[in-house]
Length: 423
Figure 1 (cartoon, rainbow, N blue to C red):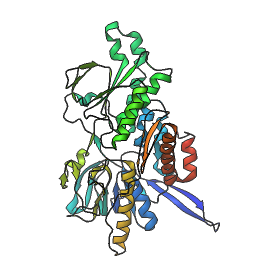
Figure 2: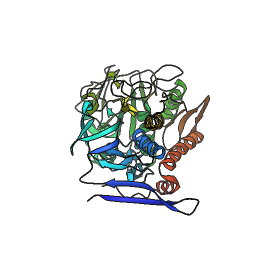
Figure 3: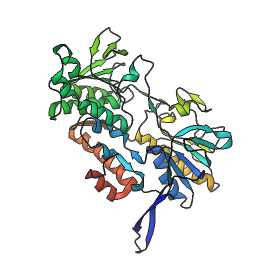
Figure 4: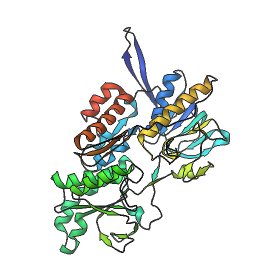
């Protein structure tokens, strides 16, 4: 038998009504009116929004983990700034009336309206594909042996490795000491910049750091944060240099071999710690499906649906969305994912009610990138904020998201970092 958890809240009238229903089952239903693949920012927002709009609808959320992962903060967990479990929100603590099926998606049979999983097929009336992305090795030899930072398990592995650097350095031969002291990050986008800032502060402040450690951040283009406004990249570079980070700009990585990062210039950097943050790609299960692809993304119509299967919506990192102002592709972000989730849910509700759908139009709310524990660069409209004001804005957006998915109770618990340890 499955386990069902029901949380309740009091309405202003004093009546008590269930507001969260999550069901975990070893013999889960093979059918769902709405099937949502992926419990990330896009999938969770879609499920929460839809059950608010159509309360009696059967919505099943499929994820391989029992938690919603706050992946935009993984750099904090990897660099010992926050506990890993703080970034894992159990689905049962999230406000949504939906079944959660813990499964791994293995394939699709869209003509038959089936999703294949490691526990058998699931059928649906409406399907939402929000499976996120994987780290791309960009075809660079040896990069697959680097440390990625995409999911909580990646942050845990990196954190465990970093804890070995100080004892490893103490036991190293003189010729090997530099490799133990050098942490190389490939990729100067948001993940690379945020991780470099956090690790620089770790090397500056924490007791378990390797003595004499240094951070090297490598970016193949001429500036950091290449998909963000140029002023953010310039400000991030200034802050990182002030923290002692060595920046290699316009310097592609060509290989990672025998513990050495090889650069296009011919320079070779020995390291025991090479972290790859050089981009993302579609999950293998998506690329191997019979879906229309262009420029490494699934092609959808203006409503975020497949044109050949209008009952299938694609959200999050899987789909490319253009900036309505410039026409350029918007970078993947939690902000964009949640907007897509809400828009798609509203359109499913409209379709069920027989009403016309509304095209998805992303709204620009700005960008926020932390650069260590005490700094951030933020753009809100025409304003550029940095330092503690920037960090305050970024922290506010994170807290606002937590409150939106679980109320003030979840926010208090999250702020207190009191979630049970991950297993």
